[in-house]
Length: 297
Image (cartoon, rainbow, N blue to C red; front, side, top):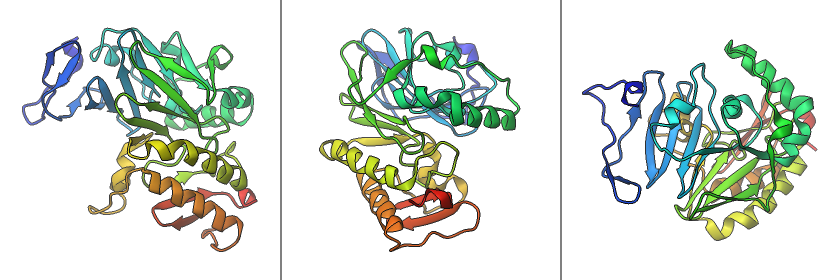
């Protein structure tokens, strides 16, 4: 198990002690030979960035471990995850884009939003084929019809920790968030961006009025847990992904989601006008969106 890690004296590493699970003595980052970076964010909860800064997460429960999204790399994923826990894995996808589901074929049980399952044979599979081709990765057959459909009534029991699913359609028709009440974490995927902008310009993204209404419903669910930490699908964007200066810091919070709702509403009412000629962009408060002109309805 140790051989997967590339160890350097210049890096800071994890130090665990067993007390009914992993106890974190400090907050380091572990790096693998493939460029993955792993950090604990709570006891038994891990944030992982692959070599292309695609974020995914692992929650260790009493009976099984939930993996939220998979990243998108040439190396296999399961061997990396087995260095963190010996519990059997189940996979919950925030949405059906390849940078979040590429390694789904390594899991026996896969959860995916019901609306994304229904939309898979159209634009979602097309987007996946194009993006996998752009990365020059092996093409995979995703058996989406065998995945477990997720709705806002879905709960995933890990044994002593029940993860709640929230519907957040927009970026895809069946985008989901996953709430870990025990650790006060929300895993948001790309549903509201990751700190820079929410990408709504891809084929299959909803029109703006539908997204605004989705955000209104989502906010009602988020308000009671507004103090939970939100973890996006590309966490390096909280600090601008190296594109917005050293002082940039805009983590996803309830305020971002509120501003995103207001931004959509103002665009629909033409109180704000988007900028650009290809993909349009617009900002309000802490929120930013990129979309197509035909979605402004």
